[in-house]
Amino acid sequence: MGLVLLVRHGQASFGAEDYDVLSRTGLEQSRRLGRVLAEQEVVPAAVVHGSMKRQRDTASAMIEAARWSVTPEVDAGWDEFDHLALMAHGRAGPESRESTERNAGPAALDKTAFQRLFDEATDRWSSGRHDEEYAEPWPAFLARAAQALHRAFAREGVSVVVSSGGPISAVCAALVDPAAGAEQVPRLWKAFDDVTVNASVTRVLNGSSGRRLLSFNEHSHLPRELVTYW
Image 1 (cartoon, helix red, strand yellow):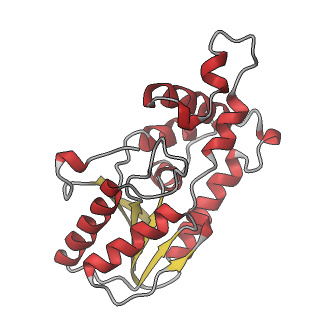
Image 2 (cartoon, rainbow, N blue to C red):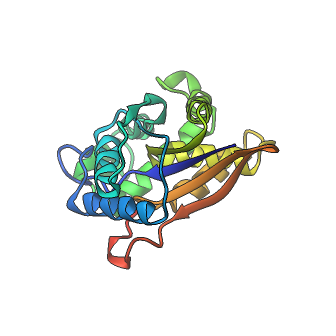
């Protein structure tokens, strides 16, 4: 029997030149989570994170706060999808009534405009109708997340994995409805992805009856002012 704790990274730096950096809030979220997991007597056999800076730094802050004697491992299978590439594919030409917004870089957009374009881009990507246009098509992304989870369960005991909302939501969608068809999976994935909180915990158990989603998006360890979705 094994248990995997899927942790979404702390808040990144929306609107900054380099998004892939934890904000001060993100660091505090990560430290609080580490302290809470230590209080819960979680002693991981391994801590794994994707290759992105925000994932690595979340893992480091969490390990330090929890005082775990473990060296984190990198598994790029837990990396987030390339949202900038997706949004570039989703943009319309200059004849569009929203061309100014669409042609602006994501860092220049406010959160409302960014969310609108992000939703359009991910809907297009996950529809499966344009797979040939993407460096990582939707089916490949789902397979990558599934393979990363399989590797996380390769060891006994508890593994703590620091990833992002996309891969975590892909894992959850597959677990709650393994028989979901091509149309249902994107909706399930989007439903999870829209509400996954930074530095939240999702627990997956591998038992005698297979893998089960025990909990999703635990974030009661965060006070209201530290609950973020970006």
